[in-house]
Image 1 (cartoon, helix red, strand yellow):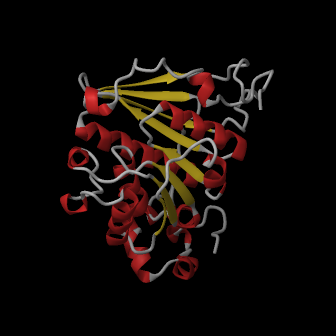
Image 2 (tube, rainbow, N blue to C red):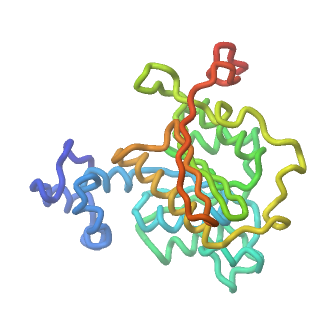
Image 3 (cartoon, rainbow, N blue to C red):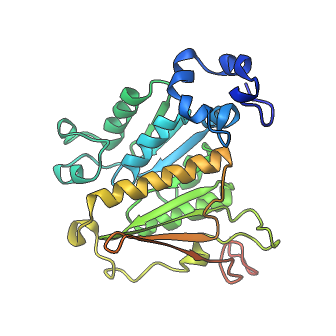
Length: 278
């Protein structure tokens, strides 16, 4: 059941709230329900939302936890990897007893322990250009925590064609970045919102960016960036505040600096440019 615009428990919406949520849910989400920017309408949207998470690793682990805690109704998880001991330094949704299990299985059980009101749809597969469209079309919002450029480009292209908002982040050794993409919409200036390819026209040459296993990564950084991804997803669903569309948040934990870089639509991009390539 949807709330009327602006209705919240503080505005006399207790009856509607009781119809939309069980007593357990009302208590569980109490701190959201008293936030005017979220309230009953926002929590109802969270409950109805279907969010697809790409990767249940360093970024996906804290992301999934906070989406579940927030009351996202359905969380899809795409990951074909298994839990290894070296994951546990940062992938906090998994435990020592989960080593050797599929990450989607471990994550599903963790969500059930945290919030039984959330449904998890496990996809124990690797996202590719061939299956990205079908996976993404079944969800309202996509959050990409993958660790390779091929997947990031496949996800962002598929989200553009499916007209789905995308929250995407990346990790370095001590730094991370985050942005939100809605390139199928126009900005306040009437120009199209930028695509991922407007920000990063092409992936770096193979071998120039070492994988996590070679370069290392600060474990708590993954928790920070995954939590920020969850915040952006929740913002996308509920609509409060100013999103990161057209802005790249950059975090450097060595100097504890947070900076935001603006970026815009590139008319040469192959998706929504003046000469789109399909």
